[in-house]
Length: 316
Ligand SMILES: C[S@@+](CC[C@H](N)C(=O)[O-])C[C@H]1O[C@@H](n2cnc3c(N)ncnc32)[C@H](O)[C@@H]1O
Image (tube, rainbow, N blue to C red; front, side):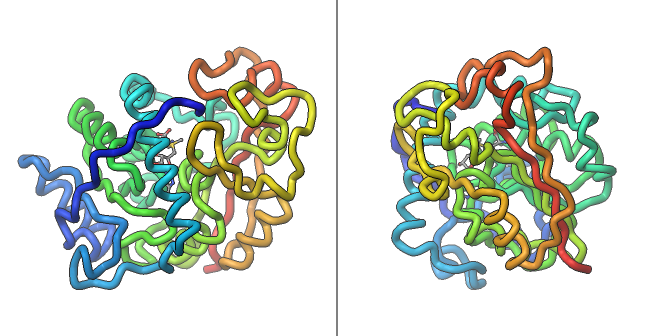
């Protein structure tokens, strides 16, 4: 992700404040709007006073997080322009659920289970193909992302594949949706990689019902330590201390967040989660090196886990 970036032209102001009332309300709204041109339920990441009468939950991001959010929005606007559309169309068309840049099949991991009937929030949904996969399996997803361009691509895919669900423009650390409205919170290299866990993990806990599950995928702390500062793939040497990668400015633009496993467990438990499993993901035998994302070659990732998948739940 070392691509030139363009600044977004601006982000939409909220179109439909009613979508805040609950995820079901958001879904009813999306269904109603399928005939019109407002299928994209857009909420600002700004303060509630700018968007509607209701208070936006979650803490103010503060200056550092605010800068990180802005940098990541610039990065993902650029990635969307370069790569987002083609990749999104391919991913939306895919029948199987897979995880990460090496497409580890969900059927080999079995972390999702039956999602039919579940209210799902995807934090950092990007082009929302993961939500689309879940919607096809009977879930009611709501996609949340901070980058308007990514949501525009998601919306185009919704129209193309005739599969609509609410898309909410918001920072995963302050999601303008009510508490306890979801059964499953999910993130596939979304907020899980690009937002400070101290901000998004408690927010995921707030959004979930008691007993609700959190499943997130991110790149490993190991690969973060082995990646060069500039362009290029991870090598065999540790190039930076683990203590420094928790907040890692990405090459080019953007800011990634990488915790070691102990710190992940601490953050999850502090937010009320019970950790069920951690899957360290290796590239499958037939996988190739990703053509766009410079993280690790497939050969590297067959030897060391470049990605990981966490499963946790809130106490009932
Ligand atoms: C790898 S992409 C999306 C992942 C998705 N699986 C996909 O590939 O389309 C990372 C996404 O995280 C989003 N993101 C970054 N920081 C965020 C934040 N603080 N809140 C919500 N989304 C964020 C970016 O806008 C981007 O769309």
